[in-house]
View 1 (tube, one colour):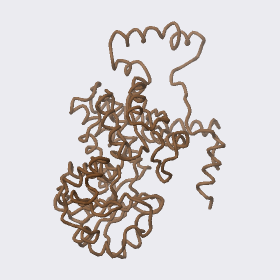
View 2: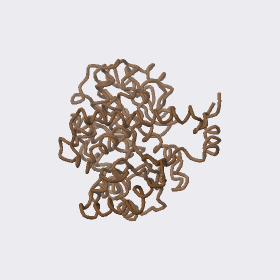
View 3: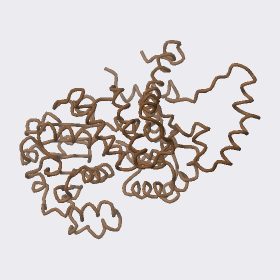
View 4: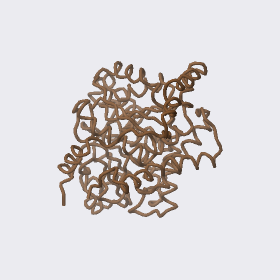
Length: 435
């Protein structure tokens, strides 16, 4: 079996990139250039100038264009590797946007560490894109950057390490709770790790019905409490994390206290194994739900979690059942907001996406080893994108409003289109096959 890392490096050098730009308009004669470029192109430019901000979405590629933007300060599994080294990851994300969601995504890395300067760069390029995906930005500045851009831009902005992870986690948890017969409002939930993913997951859990006082967050120093000796430092340096400490205000003081009587643990911390101990899982209520999402090795291996009594187990890996993968979220969410030219993204839209994922999974076969569908389920992306688009229209955030039937047909075609192109390219040897 090939070593995935060395083989990947060889492939990247061979192909010299994973995406390219191709025309989508017909060019059959020299006359066509006069329509697509000069002199004819002056007409749409005049109309955009006359019709005002946002009208470029009707005349250009912008309506289906997303930027995948990072400063390379928190690249998954690699840490602060810098902007240039982050480019292969952003390009890979752009590939998934296109292949799974039919979204034309552009990888952009910004060599800027100042949060305000980063915000200004993104703000200055907003008219080229219909949506912004922030990626691999260290905490806590990722929260600040997201908030500022959401306030200042008139296009949807999200941070995949926050909303993307939280959305898919919530979808998986909805189904895990169904299998165990538990309700989110009655469940004690541990959030193991206090980075961007779990802080966002905390907010989504509350929106889905969980009680703040039934949630315990644990970071590298132990149980997150507002009376901890580092509380003042936390309030200054990470007010987002401090807010969770205040809202939950747990009585638990130790990790063992936190696990005692818990129903769910959602871990998004550091690679294991052995980060979460079997004896802690044994302290939980019957039929516990264990999400150990660290990569490349979960905080506790599934076999150990099962031996400790876990009923439903999920990880972030594809070689174990129940992979909680952001790729089930972002392609469809962006497909939905771009299809209706939405001005914003909201938690209501993300909750609609989570419930669409959960419902589709249940309809197509829910079990302890399948609490969430996989990336090969094309219909999942159609259903999820449609739910997001309809919620955007319902909330009055869509510039474009069309019927459900028209919307579903368009979304389905956009999601199927890249796969049809791929088959044509491979069959005609325009893309060299791997094997």
